[in-house]
Length: 256
Ligand SMILES: [Zn+2]
View (cartoon, rainbow, N blue to C red):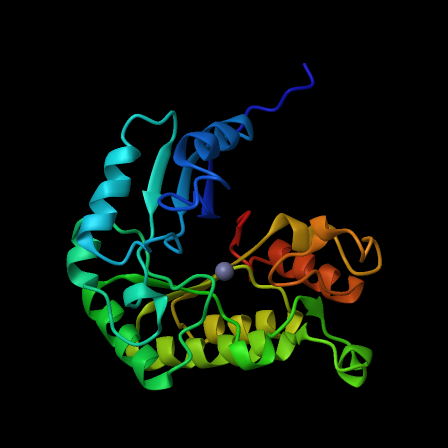
């Protein structure tokens, strides 16, 4: 009584931090935490040290994940070293079991490189996961309002996400590739995804629990626990994200 029976949950956006950042998290700690929360399948992001950008690194992490209490899958990077220039061996990595390709933590800024990546992803039937955020408009951590600009503070402009989401959706439309937008946080980006979905473009998106629960009105701005990327935005925006989730425009909740 008072308990819920649910199917095993799937988290599409997890940072297991292996290899290279085991002081933050490792495959054992992340799978124990996931299991505690009811998750049986997780997808680990490739922005590790070294990044998961070669068959050798992918094979290594897959070998570590064999005896864990849950299923851990890995995404590979889109570009070598996550530098946004040279494509990884997408076909080989996909055949080895990489579930999606992403330079998570950064966005592929170069339009020509991204177009080529989308074309390859379409050919190999791979999914691109986009950390959609233009770096020139995301220099700090604060959510933008006019005062942050006036006082010369560093910020992460929601426009950085909106522009990146639009470009990536257009490239998915042109090439026919599958595109997934990670941690969407701005209601105008959600409107863009909605429009492209209605046009039949293969685009999905996820939202984090913290962007659904918190807004700048109800957090302590001096508390570093609330510093996250993309930043917590205002209350009106939070409500719009919740509405889009209920309407099925946002497809997944993922913890990042
Ligand atoms: Zn990200």
